[in-house]
Every structure is written in C-alpha cells, then in structure tokens.
Length: 147
Image 1: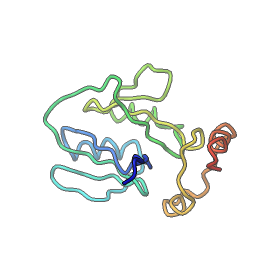
Image 2 (image 1 turned 135 degrees about the vertical axis):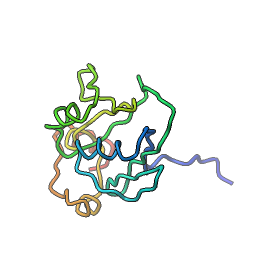
Image 3 (image 1 turned 90 degrees about the horizontal axis):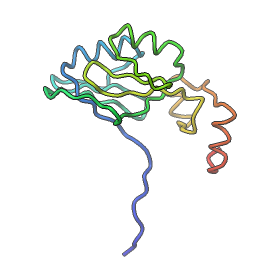
C-alpha cells in the first residue's frame, strides 16, 4: 500500500448555475464562438476541446463575489464589448472580469499570456494550432520543465 496522494492533472469541466438554459446559450453565443457537446431541458454542455462548460438550470439566485473561474480564449480583444452588449456586468477589477446574468463571476485570460497550455494535438483538433505564447509565459513553462 502506498502513501502517495493522487495528483491534480487538470479540469474536465466547470458547472455553472443559470436560470434559463436557452437564455444562457444565447448569452454565451453572443460573446463566444460556441459549439454544443450536448443538451437537455436542464443542462447544456459547451465544448472547449478536451474540456467543457456545463450550464445547469437552477431556480436559486446567486451572485459570486470572489468565487470565479478563469476562462482562456484565443483573442480577448472584443470580449469586453461583446460581454457588455450581451448583458454582462463588467467588474471594476483592472482585469477582464464580468458577471453573467445569473451572477457567475468569469475572468477572461488570453492563451498566449499564461503558462496553461493544450497539447499540439488538442489545439489542432480545435483548429487553433497557430496559437503562440508570450516570452513571459514561455519562461513560466520552462521553469517547470514544461516547454
């Protein structure tokens, strides 16, 4: 028997509570180029290559103040404009943070700027094999032996 603990590998998905699945899909589709992985009356699954966002219908209102997740995009230059037009509440954090109409706190980060990376095969499968990293992100990856 080993005393080794399981190691964290990554995220498979995140589940967000929303009041209306159709309205949530309209909101996400107004900001991002989305593809559905599946859907039912109470759930919808937005594809992100080897990961996904699950939208779950809930009648319990909430507002996240600190609890959030960082969503990685290929280009965030239009996100603020598109999010505002879709009805998001842009937060005054100095970053690109917003609340969706159901109170979910979303932070948007550009792929090139962070150490997070997808495999070449996953990027190719997503049609994003031309994404690059900044020098700072490359240094972070190299420092961990991941480049």
